[in-house]
Amino acid sequence: MQQLILIVGKEGQLGSTFEELSKRTGWARFTFSTIDKLNLTNPESIKQFFYGKKFDFIINCAAYTAVDKAEEDRETAFKLNYEAPALLAEEAALMDAGFIHISTDYVFGGQHCRPLKPGDPKQPESVYGKSKLLGEEAVLKKHSRSMIIRTSWLYSEYGRNFLKTMLRLGQEKESLKVVFDQVGTPTLANDLASSILTIIHKIESKEKSFVPGVYHFSNEGVCSWYDFAVAIFREAGSECRVFPVESGEFPTKAPRPFYSVMDKSLIKKTYEIEIPHWQDSLIKCLKKMKDSGLL
Image 1: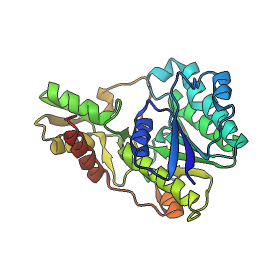
Image 2: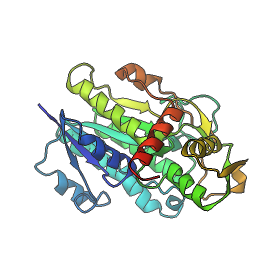
Image 3: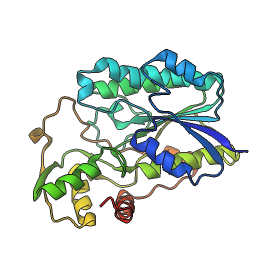
């Protein structure tokens, strides 16, 4: 029997990736929400969307991710990152659907010097981080079958992200400055989405049980934004030169975490999944973009 999976946030990187993967996932039937059918800033729209519907799993990929803009647009950020996930979790609870909510490394302050565990103290320093943390807490409170998956530095061939920005600037400029004092791990959207579907399939097939709680997922390895940029240009065959600079040269409205390497041992142990190294995933993504004419 096919699992009925709802993807909330079709327009984003992760939602687009799920849509691509759905075409070759025979054990599940997918529904993808769009803003015209499911307005997450409108509680009534959420209730109307779910009326008469039944899903086995709901995956919330939607979020307000304009980190600097959120500092001024607090109301919308909290509606999308806090209030909407709480309402979605309530709807999931009513139909006893497993609820998977995507969150971020920004819930931490970024002042650590070791891989972050899910239970480490949260000290968000931005509106974005604070709104996402409240969303996490609300989801876990509203529905006992909820799973929070925090990720970092998400990129793909879809939407706007660091990879695509670097590739564009590499064609426009001979050299670039990129910060080297912010350290984390890139996450290929395809790896995250594939792992989530693997987890759901293991739960559906009774190989594993649904274990609620907070998990971390990024690719393996560690790098700075500078290291990531250098690898992008090297693998893309670009001659654009990259120079390392400190974050002070690029002041932003919202502070960025200086260290957001995440400990992924819990999700790997609980669901027995393997996670690729970020450099291998970057090569895979660039090859796919070349093969499809995007490079």
